[in-house]
Image 1 (cartoon, rainbow, N blue to C red):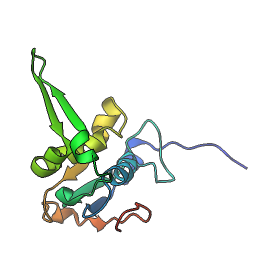
Image 2 (image 1 turned 180 degrees about the vertical axis):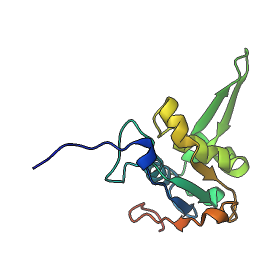
Image 3 (image 1 turned 60 degrees about the horizontal axis):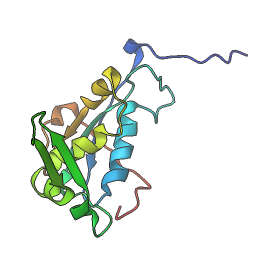
Image 4 (image 1 turned 60 degrees about the vertical axis):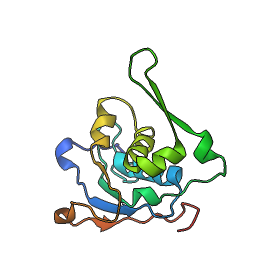
Length: 152
């Protein structure tokens, strides 16, 4: 009986396209599930040193929900320009209202591995404000998650 672990080669990886509707889904839970699919960890053929993940298209990112009554005002996102006094601080409420695409991308990026492999995985994420996307030619399948909590 051969019980050897097999690793996938780059040519053997099969990727699919999925579309996810973020309407009324909890932000963190949805982002963690998307990160798992970008890494390919839900597949039985997952290989740690290869990018085995699928392409993910997220629509309606501005309609994502956030738990907690004080979180929209207390949670802050920081960007430093590198200059003295160049720190930019935005609250979660401001990010949801004005920059929902950047918010969603930053949350998912925080859940991916850092380095060359993580950047390669991150390039397969496409986030759109509103229900329209430009990847109809890839004929993406609808991806639903069973246990996200909130209103599914």
